[in-house]
Image (cartoon, rainbow, N blue to C red; front, side, top):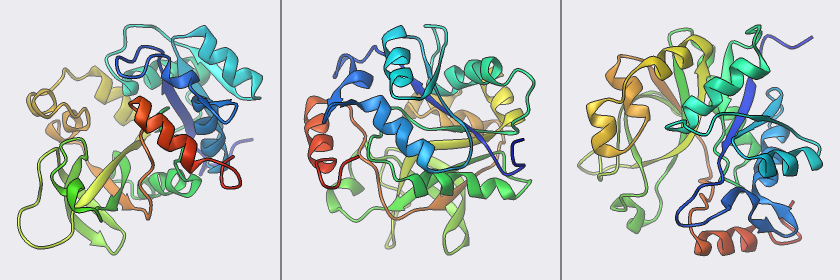
Length: 250
């Protein structure tokens, strides 16, 4: 029997990547990157973990490592749409009220960060939860690839998101927050999100979470200590190999 506090954790993964072809199966110390992510999600211990992919080789790699994978369609516009299909396959009876989306290119994600993403949904007013960390490098403050969160503080380690942007925001003195693209959805919120058309600000900023905000959905943010490395390029992959090298690797 599952616990009422459990979530269904889904990791979307697709083989197509222009800057790093075959990214999910990229070797990191003898282990495919997607398996590193699956292991860390499993270690978060917030519920069962399934990789959602459109590629049979990715699914096979996960299964060989002892994980579970499900094959989804090839035409999804983003990871949220892919996990929505996967949730319907894996949990057609809808036993799980919370679906957690862990990106498949975060091999250094901390299990504690995945668990932290789940926490804001304890508040029934929250539709979607995500995580962020303080920006501590000057170059990241103006880097368009470092997405920032503008929000209203609710406590020392939580805020309500008002906006997500690639710009340097908010203006003025004070900390800036680096958004980490990991989401926990209420099942009904995920259903609603995927039924919405892409929004104006989503298309302008190229940030899918803005679709939810523009539709009036509430997103709360838990603050965590570490920003995981997102692997998008060969240089990122080399850095991941360095970070996960023995004795610190897994």
